[in-house]
Length: 395
View 1 (cartoon, rainbow, N blue to C red):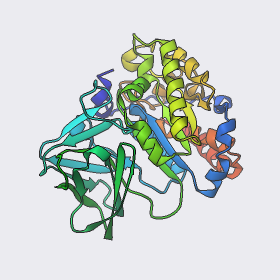
View 2: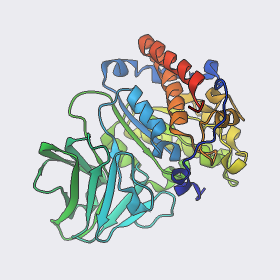
View 3: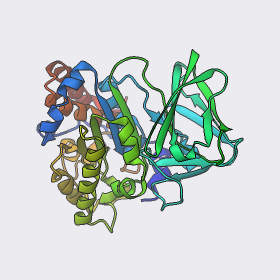
View 4: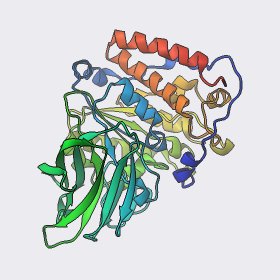
């Protein structure tokens, strides 16, 4: 769905109507086949959990995954990317400005000779004078550590962050590498430039990360607007190399919206692709637990998603933990109630910030139940109840 690419960011006015409350299915709000997920309870309670969340525009927008990150009390700031170079919009945390000659690509386009990791995007250059300026959108945000994700075979041009940063370490596994830089003083912006240390003159960037300074929950969320799972499966050819390095405890995958509107979608090949992907990830990171979420109920441009229920059926049959967000919303057709409550934007495909945050609270509620965290569950349940009553009512 190409129109999703920028449309979700441009349409910002929610549909509103005065109603008394929003109806959701709280009894449906649970994680199915959750035995393997329950094993992560100890890591969650000890604050030693590493989460990777991949998805489509619902994740890239950031309100859904950002609220999950807050509820999980994650310490790190995740992985960020200079999206405008790849013809997308700036991320939540940074404004970026590029100079020099860069080529950007995403998984939405066929192979172009540039490798792609689990960010779903990549930017590459052979221009030794090329630079990218990163400026924190929040004036209160400061950091001392920056990790640059790149490729092992593109390191004839090495990243450099200027005199205020020192290179403290480098790690390489397979075709992926990262460079860790550290500053003596906190900063809120920096410039990524390049220096030539080899025969080749190529550098490919797969994102930057702000590692946490102390022990705690790690949560990395990465989405691609308009993406289907098969785009990641077939075109993000460095995913497994990155997984070898990251070794996440939990991999959340939130796809299905774009598949549901795809006239050429086919259930058997989709199921086969998922099974292959899960099996391959488990080879490279055997302790990782998958958690798949269903697409939310939507009515993009007043169209009924033809394959929404079939996509959900396939995801629920994959024998990994599965969260049916669609059912928790109220089931097929429930988005109409969410629209009336002001929880959707005009496109009826993407939600308002408040709508996404409610979905995130429901999701986290199911997680806390699975992990047996009664205190977190009860506290969040009270928030959810209040949110359901108050959401969407105009001031």
